[in-house]
Amino acid sequence: MRAMPKFMTISGLMVMGFLYVPVIVLIGFSFNASAVGLAWGGFSLQWYEKLLTDPSIIDAMMNSLIIAVVSTVCSLLFGLGAAIGLEQWRDGDSSWVSTLILLPLVIPEILMGVALLMIFVMVQAPLGFGSIIIGHMVFNLPLTVVILRARLRKFDPAWEEAARDLGATSWDVLTNITLPMLRPAIVGAALLSFTVSLDDFVVTFFVAGPGSTTLPLKVFSMIKTGITPEVNALSAIMVMISMACVGLSWLFQQQANSSLRKKDSRS
Image 1 (cartoon, helix red, strand yellow):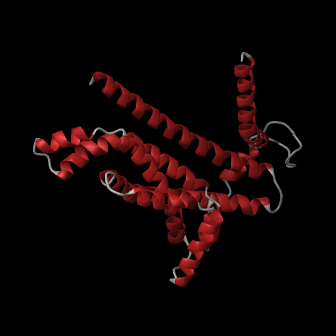
Image 2 (image 1 turned 90 degrees about the vertical axis):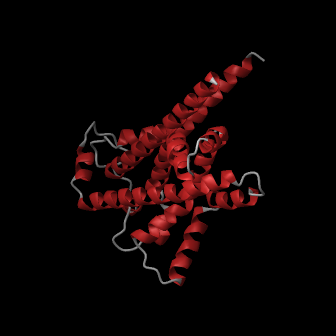
Image 3 (image 1 turned 60 degrees about the horizontal axis):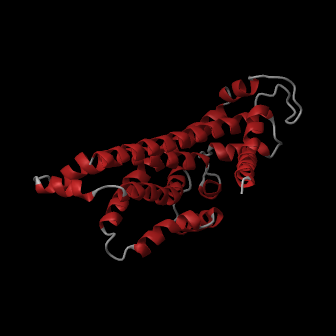
């Protein structure tokens, strides 16, 4: 029995190494002065400088940021209404609706990409920024609804009922009580959706059009000629941005949970 904690510690360290050692190696070789990907030639920032002066990289980065921001905002607007509506309908038979909303999260991305491409072709919609934004909303919406509903489950409906008893309208309750209580979850969902949209490759690959190349597509096109320190530098930038957004999302969620615990203890 005493060996169990030690075994679990070793197992946990092995899992962390399995997950993060490749990322650390990738970031380390992005500072490689040698043009040969796996031959260390000293520390250098030349590949990051080259990225910042490459117009195609800058265009891909701007495309990714625009698509991620727009898809995140749209997902929040629609997801907020869906989450509040589903929670108000929780007493009814809404389990099947919740299951349908969660399905895009478990459907393989390649199938989702093919299905979206077929729809766009059937309706003769042009492929480009609009099609990518819609494609990203397909998996961002369920993610947003799940995060917001998790926060709403911890929300005491007595606060809203008390506000209505005092004469507050539905709009007043939404803007002065519900949304402020949901703010940490909204920020967390926005950061997570932004990260997922920024990193998506499979769906984007199927629904992208001319002039709408994103960073993941750019990395894929660069890898075709071999893994170089320039590819490592671009990948490292994407990894660091993603980890920062996920970390901030987790931080907001933790702050929200701690504030709820403090309010419950006071009450």
